[in-house]
Structure formats: structure tokens, C-alpha cells
Image 1 (tube, rainbow, N blue to C red):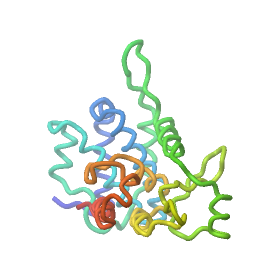
Image 2: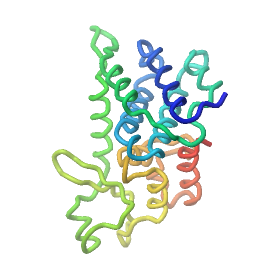
Image 3: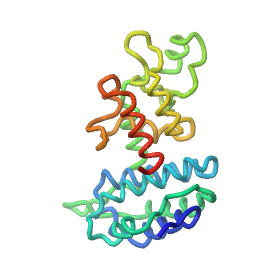
Length: 235
């Protein structure tokens, strides 16, 4: 069964909504964080660029693959190609409603019936984690390049420190951008979804056997590009 365009989006959102009450516990916190981040990326960028919608949708599916094999939502993913084909009609309004719905969930986490953090907190914590990576300030980048930085770099906004450019993007010797970083950033649409691109570089990657940012120069550039392409194209 192949559901393209808006139907694939609505179908996935409906499935998440249907199983939302137990989904967090069934996924685990890491996959739950990834699901929320990709849903937020969809809300922020789907109306602006169809590729953002398609990639975020696939990121949600990647998170949901962490469900137990017998879970009905996992089985639906295995039997329905939800995100294939050209994205023609993203539905950020419905995604925003789903994100708000997930934010209202308060899942018990253990002794004392403490509640798990809400969606906004999860996203804020994920962004805080990404901002802890070594980075250059906007002033340092301007000095390094004698003006505006070259296009294609990931630029994260820190509420306290302003713009931050993750340091893995630059060579250790000359400080120039790695060519492979610019190529992967282009694939990941880092100009529209910098947090998603930074998360790809700074999180573990099963395909590569480690954190992509740490593997620059260790693996062939083609392997890094191939892993990013696999995400973008849903290979």
C-alpha cells in the first residue's frame, strides 16, 4: 500500500494520536525525544519546504521503529509505505495539533509517581544538549572568514550567547569548512532545520557505527554522504 502526499502525513499523525497514551512508555525516552523533535521540525518547516516535511516524516518513522515488533503502530509502519513519493501537500496544522496533544501527556516515570517532562521541555533539553558541543561564536566566525561565513553552515541560536556554529564543521588546520559537511548540510536542509541537521551530526548513527561528526576524516566522505542520503531518500 502506497499512500503519498498529504494522505501519508495524515495517516502517520492519526496512528501516533491513536496510540499516544502508551506510546511514550513503549518507545523509551530517547526515541520519544527524537519523535518530538522531528514533529517540531515538521511544524516549523513543512509549509516552507516540502523536503523538510518529507525528511521530518521519515525521522518520525525512524523513531517509531524502536517500538516492539508486535506493537500495532510498528506493524502499520512495516505494512504501509507512509512517506514515499513526492510530498505535495504537507499538513503543519494537523502536526501542530498533534504536538500540543503529546505535550499534554504526563507519563509516570517511576518512584513517587513523578511525571515525565512535557514536549516543550524535551525539545528544549535536546537543543541544550546540542548547544553544549564545541562551537564558534558569530564574532569568531566573522573574524575567521574576514566577514560573513560561507553559506551552508549550521547556525544554532543560543538564548544567552547568540549564534553558535558547531566546531566540527571546520578543519583543525585552516579552519575552513569541511567539504563533506557542506554537502551533508545541504542534503539535510540545515538552513531551514539547523537543529535537525545538528542532531544528525552529533548523535549516534547505527549505519555509521558512531557519531557522524566524530567520524569526519575517519570514514570516507562518501559514507557520510550516503548515510545522510539514506535518511533523505528513505533508503
